[in-house]
Image (cartoon, rainbow, N blue to C red; front, top):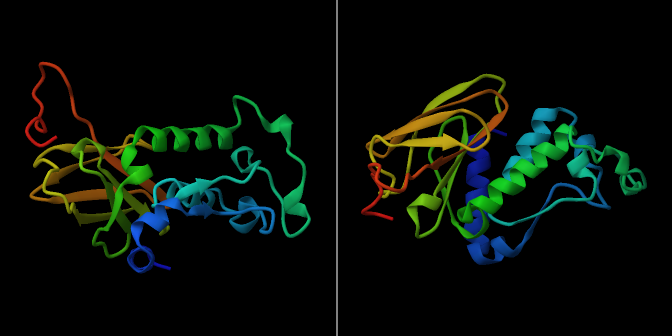
Length: 211
């Protein structure tokens, strides 16, 4: 499925259901009745992409026990295995990744209660989560293809300032907004979560009149 098609499907589900019910609904990738995520999606990039969308699309992420540790398990009863406590270590990469997603969601109010706007794209899944505060705006761009993709994405919010930068919460990537458009380059098999960074204090703040 292309990113564009996936975006249309999500947009129509939200339009048909309504945002408020969607925000209250669980986003589940696996549970006691389904094979574990690592079994359904064997490639690490697929798992990370699914989890990044789980924490950025409207809804309430529901993480099945052990997913945050990389536990494996196929069909019943394999997916119901006991918790692998020996995987709870500071150097577990899956645990670090899950904590990063949780921190990102906790730090951005729009990911918890913000509305959903599909953004136009040819190859990418691109959408915006936003509230009534511009500093809480989040733009998510997902590249499911095997090559890096560069596209010009319309930022459908007049409060996002011209020439300002938006920074990816998951990497060192960034993008600049010009005339309501943003040229983004998203690496293969990855997700970018772009947010404005608004400085405080005596420094110049392009957003001081629109916050």
